[in-house]
Structures are given as C-alpha cells and as structure tokens.
Image (cartoon, rainbow, N blue to C red; front, side, top):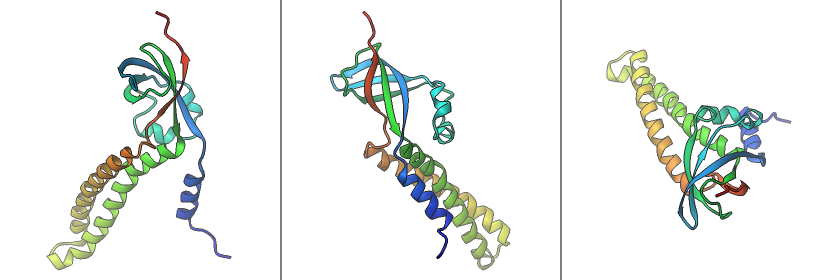
Length: 168
C-alpha cells in the first residue's frame, strides 16, 4: 500500500477540523438593529487554542481590534459578547496570507532561473528577478483571494451569545 503524501495529510487534517475558537468582545456601538461594532481584547484563552500560531501570525494576541458584525443576539452598547470562529477559517486565512505568496515566489524564481540563459543573464540573476516578481504576483493573488473568501462570510466571527449585559 502506498503511503499518503504530506500534502494529502495536511489537507485531510485541515478539512477534518471541527472545533472552534472563542473570544469575548465588548460592543462599542450599534450601527443599526442588525449590526454592531465590537472591540476584541485578546485574552489568555488564545494560549489554549490550537490555532494560536496562525492567529498570532495574522496579528492576533498582541492588539485589540474593531470588527463590525451581525447582531444576532440583540447586543447593546457595553455588552460583552462571545465570538466564535472555526479553526479551519483561521488556517484558511493563514494559507491565503502565506502559502500563495510563497508558491508565487518559488514558481517564478524557478522559471526565472530556467529562462535566464535565453535572455542573456546568469541563472542567479533570473532567479532573483523571478522571485521578486513571484512575490508581487503572489501577494496580489493573495489579496484577490482574500477578498473573495471574505464574501462567503465563513471567515468572519459570529456573535453567539451575550456573556454579560451592560448595566445602565
């Protein structure tokens, strides 16, 4: 029997993730009846999350940030709410942010190296030029992909409950 490749194992692992990451946030403003703005303050819970490495790489656990989300629980200004995001969404975002540019860099570096002699350059020069072009193309594709993934709303946290009501 043939051993599965590392790539297949990684894909199966990512697809089989069903756990979720949870965080609390404070409602800072009600935009309309069905949208609120919340500020997320990173907590110690991030340290226990198995996706913390990907989240930290995306700028998490060090800064507070604002989100505008659907208000499915009737939250009001000052309420503390629970946000839920699947670990798969965090890993997907990490792959978009890092994997696409890395593939672009490597692919065009190899292409530049192979085509350099035909253009009267040394292979190393072609590889450097190709790598820079691949990085630019990779980040552009990453940005385009991120915009389209954002529209499917699976990568956006969801308010799942009001943890505590703000007393007036």
